[in-house]
Amino acid sequence: MSVSREQIEQEVRAEIMQSFAEHFSREKERKLENYRQQNAYIQKGQTLFTGSSLMEQFPVTEYCLNEGLPVAYNRGIGGYTTDEFIAAIDTVLLDPQPARLFINIGTNDIRPMPEGEDWFAHLSANYRSICEIIREKLPDTVVYMMAYYPVNGQAPMARDNPGMQVRTNENIARANRMVEALAAEFGFHYIDVNDGLKDAEGNLQIEHTADGIHFDAAAYRTVFERLKKYL
Image (cartoon, rainbow, N blue to C red; front, side, top):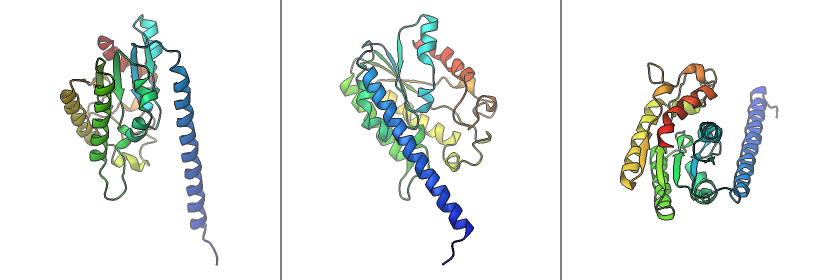
């Protein structure tokens, strides 16, 4: 039985994707283990930033040191969903016992889901669980729940990304309303520092992004300038 070129290409693509997924999973585990080890040496009661890649890539520790602001630790892990975050919550949130917490987790949940599952219901339930854990385990921590950042589906690397069909600014706005409501319910603070990141249409400024989701150091500096009053 002959195998078509198309079948071979599909199999090769599947193998490449599987290899990438396995590598990405190992990389997340490596970062988590590094954080576990680092937590043994940090100062408790400081400021903590935590979440997924958009938090991991935020050089907030360096910015705070340069500005003479209180110590800020970063425990973001790229690719994390709320499921993974909850599984690792001791390391990425609870163990540092922060006095101030900035959290931005869940954008990776705004994605195509298996048939019969709804991304919004999944994200809402998990974020509520995270809030319940924080309130129970860290009752004295001041919590800032950050609005999700805008995206740009016209960025060069975004156009062929099927996930961008779900990860739209409309869905991000819907998710932000949910986060804002949770913050009010739990007595936390909801903060939106995105105004300097958007173009006239409300998209992430294209000059700061290649994939439509992540952005450069200049954009992070814009975010930091708007966060300083909370630090």
